[in-house]
Image 1 (tube, rainbow, N blue to C red):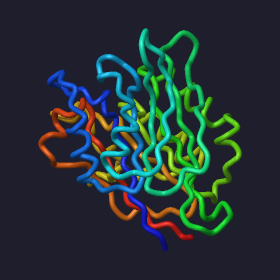
Image 2 (cartoon, helix red, strand yellow):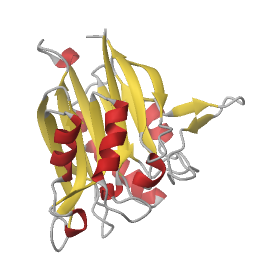
Image 3 (cartoon, rainbow, N blue to C red):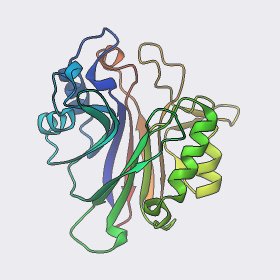
Length: 252
């Protein structure tokens, strides 16, 4: 068995709810998690509001991640932003899946393949999908369909190790059935209430969470052993979202 810890975090361009650009707060939070893989959303590159930095590179280097991938979803007058994956394990493939629906805001899903160990074969790889979905329920439903029909996702068999994480913007958990019943995933970030209902771990807004927008779905040879967020005080102001983590045991 191999253990991996995965974090997903919408960092809001490292601009906190106090409107300060402070990547050092995001760095402190990520260092505290000490995860093997980090899925980030709203990551700037070359944008004036974030000092024209490549935030993925800054965060990767500051937190000791030798591998990172950055995918752009939105192009601004100067610079771009999108999703980024940081990893302590080798990233052997990467690409971006366009999830934009009609004239809605540009959205995307970054696909990366992680090499878990030195052995060859799908059993020793982890397929990661790092997404940021739209604001309307109908838009999100269409985006899930685009993802499922994509060449990258369709090529992965149910028995292969696969994680779909990120900012789902799914306030009412309307996508849960599509992933769990339709595609045989489990949701690491769901909690079972005393009445037996599934309740998403609340992450938004960060200062007083009411919605479970940030989620981690998984399938394959993965077994979730722990899940949670953070009690760090700076996490309440560092972004408008809280990060969540899931720890897995992988049968390799």
